[in-house]
Length: 311
Image 1: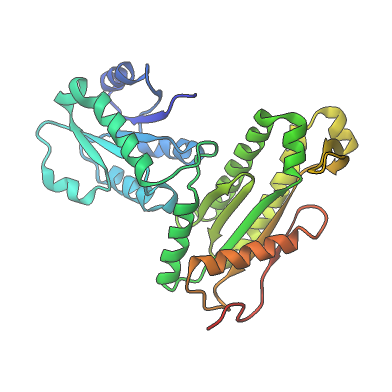
Image 2: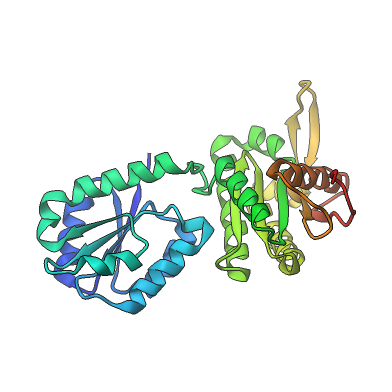
C-alpha cells in the first residue's frame, strides 16, 4: 500500500528539514515554501493532510486556507497549523483548521497529531481509496444541502461504456488505472471551470457524479468527453488500439467483440423541476445516463422535461 501524503508548507528551511525527518518514514512528504505554490499540487493530488507553518502570522495565508476549506471537495481535508510559542489564541478563531501545534512541541507531538488528524478525517467522510474522491455519503449530502438552500445547479452522472470487458481482458491493475485517471480528468476539468462550487464524487466502479452551475455543465461535459476520447485509447495495446476493439467474454461466457471504451453522461438540473430529495435528482440523472448509453460513442444527454417528479 502506498504511503499517505502529507504536504508541508513553510519558508523555514530548518523547520522543513526537521519535519521531513520526523514524518518521511511513515508518510509521503511533499514540501513547499509557500501555500500558493502548493495549491496546484493539492488540487491535482488531494493529499491526506496539510501542515502549514504560521509561526509568522500572515492574513494572506489565512485567506488561502479558508478559501481552500470552503471548497466542497476539500472541506474535510485536515490542516494542522504550526504556531509560535507566543501565538495569540484569538487568531485561531478565523482559521479553518483542525488542529495546531506549538513550535517547541513539534519533536514530541507531531507524529501523533498527524496520525490522529488523518484518522479523524477518514472517519468523518468516506473517500474512495482508488480515486481519493468523495463517495456516496458525501455526494448525497452535497446534493441535499444544495436543494435545501434552493440553489439552482446541474448534476451529471458519468459512466464508462464497455469497461467490464476491458477490465476482464487487461486485468484489474490496468482497469484500476483507467478508473483513477478518469476520476482525475473529471476532477481537473470541473475544477478548472468552477474552482470552488464545483463538486466531483465517485459513486463506485466506473461511475462518477459531478455538480456544477447549470450555465457551465454542457461546456464542462463536452470537454470531459473530448479528453476521455483522447486519453482512453492509450490504455489499449497498440494492436487493439489499431483495430479499435478487443475480444472478451460476456456474462454468458461467449466471446464477443467490444469497441474501445467511451463515456456516457446523463445530466439533469432543478431549474424546471421541484426536486426535494437527493434521490429524486440522482434518479433522473441516472435515467438520462441510461438514455445516453443507447447512442454509439461518447455522448451526453440533458433532461429538459418539466415536472418529472411530483409536486
